Amino acid sequence: MTGGTSGTMAENPAFHVIVLGPTGGPREDCVTGILVRSTSTKWSPNSVVAVDAGTLLAGIIRLMERFLPECKDDRGVMTSGPFQGLELPCRTAQANAAHVFREIIGAVLITHPHLDHISGLAINTPILEAGNGPKPVAALPSVLSAIKNHMFNDVIWPNLSDEDGGAGLLTYQRLVEGGNPRFGRGDSRGYVRACNGLLTKCLSVSHGRCKQRYHPENGGPHRVGSTVFSDHHLMFPSRAISVDHTDGSFYSPARSPHLLPSKSKEPVMETVESSAFFLRDHYSGSEIIVFGDVEPDAVSLGTHNKRVWEAAAPKIATGKLRAIFIECSYNDSTDDSYLYGHMCPRHLVSELTALARRVMEVRDSNRGDKKRKREPADPVETGSEQVSPRSKRTLSSFADKGRTPESLVESRPLPRESVEIPQIPKVDLGDVLRSPDSGTWADTDPPLEGLKIYIIHVKENLTDGPHPGEQILRELQAHGEAAHLGCEFFIPNPLEGIWI
Image (cartoon, rainbow, N blue to C red; front, side, top):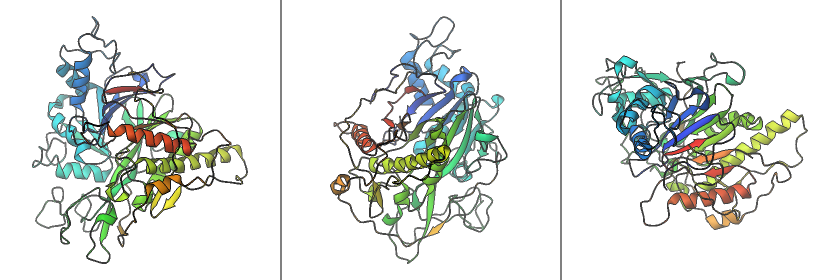
């Protein structure tokens, strides 16, 4: 994929999104990181929020190098590119990128603490200047605990936070899972300030399961959530980690439960907690959702995504939710056993079908209609999989239509589960895709019409063949058309600006 902006500005855009990194590795230079701002803020200080920071300053520098100096006028204002309209005070790309990081980015939201989502934050933070005050890093408590204890800990990286005697360049903001009900009114209830012009609310989702020993950040003896620490009395509670290797298995944090060998009858499996951020434009009330890495509910054997869809459906029904940024790491040839807590097209469309069903229920309720005689049927179930049949829709270009230029209390953790690890049978994908839907909403407007789905986490294979995103996009479009969803799928290019 190649970078750049494309198309024309969307009509009345509320959001400007810059995709610094849309991949999940193995290259380290374009892993997950995006910038989001409200179009009403005019690039004012603290008007941008970064969601994840696998790639951050390096991506901004590459963008600056692409458009400087040709696209900078005599007043120092960028005249084109994703940073169009931004006044730059410096001459070089590096210095201007540092200015953006220090002054324009108001906060960093972290979905989960895997390296491809936080490595840029660690490397970039030393250039912050204490005189500007600490940069907020906001996330669920389990995520910040992992960052605090296993990255900014004076071992892996200096403690640059304002906790435990650190340098004070960062400050942790522990978000309330599901939103803080003490903030906001009406539709914005539960949302907290992300940066100038943007509000946010965070829901937890599953990124697979792992076998670990847990206790909360304060060193308590009980197990909770997804905060990973040892209870050894000789170790500081904010510096300890202990992974149970007694069964000889290698720790794989994003591994689905059926992959872990079971020598005991009831191994304790813990959910690897990730996040879905609802971002709300304070001025228009429009919203987008940005997911971290996430697995389908069908594979996780839980209903974490269902809670997100229940929150999103009324916003789609009223036209407030404009786009979803979500991962789809592998194509449909990948067996569930090798998804490692990620999505593939059949599962993502199955999840979107669940969202569509909920949207239809909300619309019917708003109209006061009686229950439909024939509800859309669930996606085809095979073993633990849910899939949607394929269709004949052809691949669109990555620059297809719809693309455009340019608080803090303990959260409610995901429940700990003790399970017998199931063996998921292998599925003949061809048989699954040939199975017809038993019901559709083809006689109505597509439930997700107008919604844009941007894929921001594709695992690259670094071969001479086509980029894996091309196959993923074909499969998403085929399944989406078969399910009559009405949404559009896009895979952003690295360093692309999108107006929504």
